[in-house]
Image (spheres, one colour):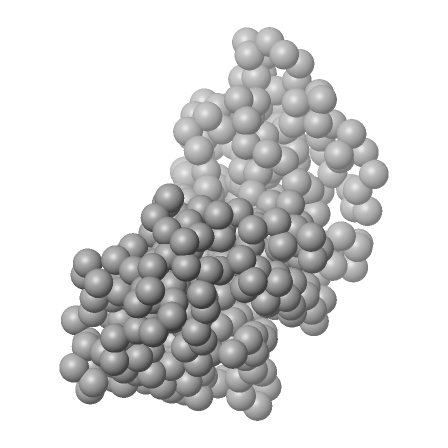
Length: 373
């Protein structure tokens, strides 16, 4: 991260904290910490914490073996380290809280989906008298609108994923197992330049398994007449893609062709509805209406999409109750589906960017039902 990017993000963070009435923001290792500092730590048995206070250098608590990561930052930081004895942790957390001026009456925010009890309990004990509150929106509001470099990373992640699927198609044959196909796809994604940490393990689900939106690949082998749902993604410089395409294994039942055509139309309707100032709920409505009018509404069992970036699921969420107006730089999925229990399922998922004048699909892999096998 450059000093310019850091300064800009710190300024925006300070404004958000002021609006929320926060003195400090506490973050665990994760995407938000990486977004604000460029630092990457794995969650482990050793606690790591960052404290952000407006107009002060970030305060970091890290184990000694991780201290090198903070030595050459392009911005000032106060770093407190500890050794292998857990008995020393509390004292180091107290030093960090003192440096962050966390005295009685201060309000400290945290991300409820990310903060774990290990760091939270040490922090609370080290800052008696402070008030701790969930502050998910403070960082989410920063991350939800991507800048030009972030968008380019996402374009690359989409390109890698699309090329990988095309390279996997020759392995998709009657008799191949879901796990075999998922393994080949993972290999192809990595060969084409994805970061080693993928957004999620590929979903490869055929026949009755394809009616489960979040199926796990099994040893089930592809059979004539199956629909095959493949949901996969790639990562580039820490930014993700998340795509889904559905295939026909040989000749399929006419109803399966029909639901594939309906989902294709719903996907197109959702993408057409997107644009600046459009409510997130309007995209869900546009896609869902197509499926409901076709008579399959009860088989579309999830929201139309979710935000995408450094996480595979983040703001904005494209669901019926979300009245958030979309804005340029927001990126999300459009992924309607129809799932017929114990039979087959269809999902078509694209990655969409809101622009100044409309919306752009970052993904362009063929969406029509293609025959494999």
